[in-house]
Image 1 (tube, rainbow, N blue to C red):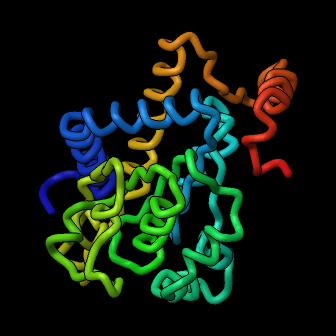
Image 2: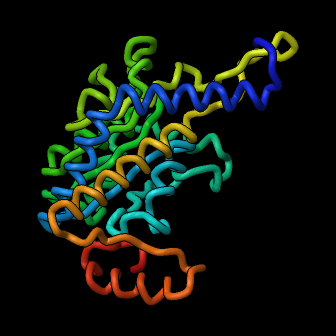
Length: 251
């Protein structure tokens, strides 16, 4: 690790990754925003899925002030985060064959919807099967992953494939294998993960693109406002009433 405090070095690493994503993923971000706008305009519904810490980025675009009201969380019990005990259960469930199919079969997803799947490694059975199953059911799939894992690790799915191989659009977070940005001679393991910072920014860039794309078509984007702003609850009530048949987190 070079000169500078660990905090400074982490910020530098995160900013560098964000700049790479901005410079290298612009075309994919535009395509993802257009796809979500198409889905909204055509009467489809929007869903986001992530397991473990990848779920944080999925949760960040659901029921979010300034975000699209139509984005719903496709939750898999036990893998949403560290709220289960033991926390390692979520990691184990990501490798279970058939779980994704069971979730899709009992969820409200249908042909014409779009599913955003977030998985840093993209190598486990759950995100791979989620993408395969969603596309088989007529959904469009946007994958948010680190493409580096596909060349530096092996798949844990029986097909030998990764999430990126089963998506209509792939957003590459550029995160290095291992998700740790810093090293220090006095610390035996690399540390300071940046995947949440970068992945969340990627998705918010897509949401912004979607809102602008809808406005360009003469469609008011179904955006939520903060409940802590005067008039926010009234605004959200109007949006939810208008799009109630496509919002599932309030039922």
